[in-house]
Length: 160
Image (tube, rainbow, N blue to C red; front, side, top):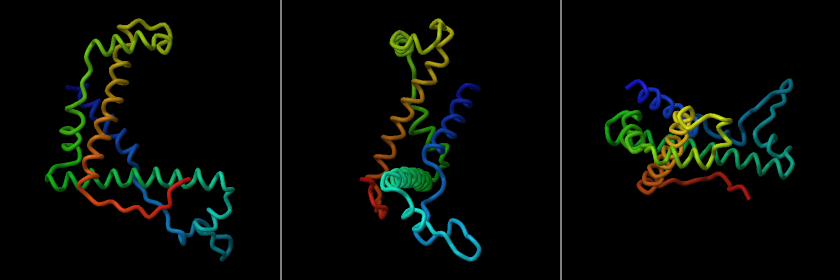
């Protein structure tokens, strides 16, 4: 039971790290002031080199996707009249399992990664890695399904 609580706690932290919690700034947002002169988001972006502008746009797009994912999970939990925790338990945690064959296979393919640990000593680490991979896949499936049910409109220009 304790390992399940630790696993669920890890996943909640992991999911909210993935989906983040703040939104993009508007072009008129003031980022700093020098005396009475304002430096806006627009000033900041225009001062970037073209390559840096692309990286910045990619960052904003990734952050926006995380916020959209968070909103999708919140709306689905509200629709079902359950907490986000219960939604994640039902749709992600309950579907993540690790069998011994997967642990053995992963260990054999990645022995060098475990710096001399035998399979028994590496088992917990491997199980967590596999659970993380499966959890990410389940989260992507859930978000993909939720996106089909709601119209999402993006106004942020796509990075080139």
